[in-house]
Length: 87
Image (cartoon, rainbow, N blue to C red; front, side, top):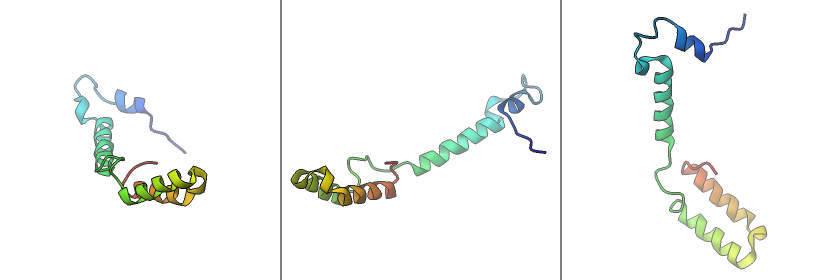
């Protein structure tokens, strides 16, 4: 039998009047997710990350146009991803 756990089962289990909202399983899970997201957040601003690949990308685009610089654009995106940005 495949049983799903719904949000309503957390809210209505037991005496909700006496439960502390911060000690609920939902609140604990929310706090855990927030901690993971904060730990994975980039340490730099995106404009300051990967200056080497950014410079090469920008120079190529100015000189040759965006269509001819896919290699440098992809290299800069990969660098930003390694720094923790979602691009």
